[in-house]
Image (cartoon, rainbow, N blue to C red):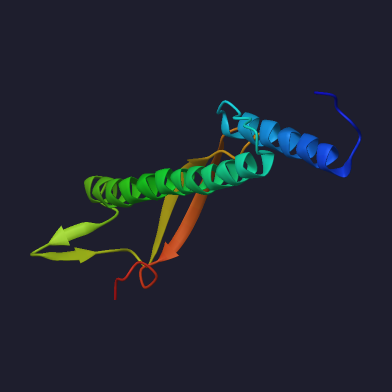
Length: 120
């Protein structure tokens, strides 16, 4: 089969390049079938699925931290439990370590008012 320089050939090559680039970014093996447009649609569906996994990992981390922080605050007496009532100072500082892609870890502090955290 000879290749010619038709718009369809150029389009197929472009689809294959895009699929290769997406596969590399998603860390999966590219699939090249007889129908590049279908391959692209399959890869787009995979992007949708993979893009859900990362936020879910971060939600899980946030939930875990949301449990750990108050427990630690009770242990270090920032929060006090007295007769079934939890007391909080007017301002509560929570320290975390954050890292963005391509950057170093950084210590950050967030200050919350008691009202922001649901205390009266």
